[in-house]
Image 1 (spheres, helix red, strand yellow):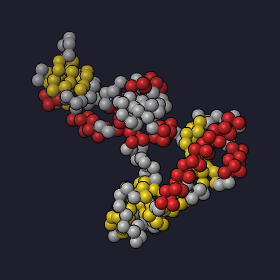
Image 2: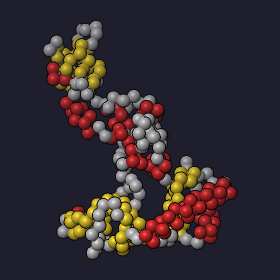
Image 3: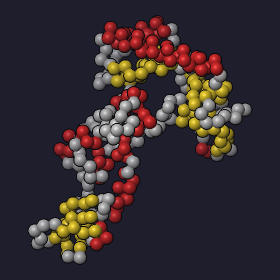
Image 4: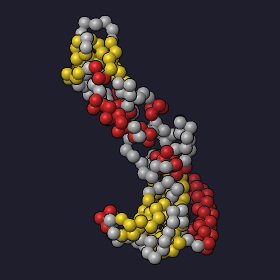
Amino acid sequence: MTEIIGVRFKSVGKVYYFSPGEYKIENGEKVIVETARGIECGEVVLGNKLVDDNDIVAPLKSVIRIATDEDFLQIEKNKLKEKEAFEICEKKIEQYKLNMNLVDVECTFDYSKLLFYFTSDNRVDFRELVKDLASCFHTRIELRQIGVRDEAKMLGGLGVCGRPFCCSSFLGEFQPVSIKMAKEQSLSLNPTKISGTCGRLMCCLKYEQDGYEELLKLTPKVGAIVDTPNGKGTVTDVNLISGKLHVKLEGAVSDTVFDRAQVKLIKDSYIRLNREEINALKGLE
């Protein structure tokens, strides 16, 4: 068994594991640790805990120290540097006429690196910008192009539901979301109805997908041939949640509604995206 702590460096970010060494650390405390980016200050979200050796990637780096008052002063100074760096970088982007949108600036705790996050529709040649920024701030400069989902996570905002973005409030990592999920959940495939502020499919499509997949295993799909108490027919509409099926019986003029338990599947159908739907929704995933 190995003793670990879990540390998060952003309010809603991935949790990284470190060895607490001789320290007994509680949730919510700030610690100074060494990361791949340099010396960083993070918040403990998992206090001292013993885990199986097979559940961790060795070797674990040890906590340098629990953050002190001097460390908190350094963090405040770094925030001022980040704000200054953002303003200067924006002016230089305009000066070099670069097609990029600056989103955020991060400064490592020990000021060994400044990271500039930006979005752009195309590749950007920012070599001259990096040289200029390095000569201005006298530290390592890294420009990192991010996607629109990452931009939304960093900036935050309110979704169509009226609540803060899931990605910026509690989702540590993005979950894969597909058009197929929207189709299986019988949602309107209107891009404005199923996409978030970032312009991509809403993350919440993932939340109920497992439930819909289970219901799809039990429920005939549209186009399926079924045997009902009134004879054979073809399913024309399905409500997965209620389990109600609209069935066009052989020789009937209108549909008849049956409960899922009342019918017996003869030949099932498939949920497919047609070419027009694929073209219309290209770029949402």
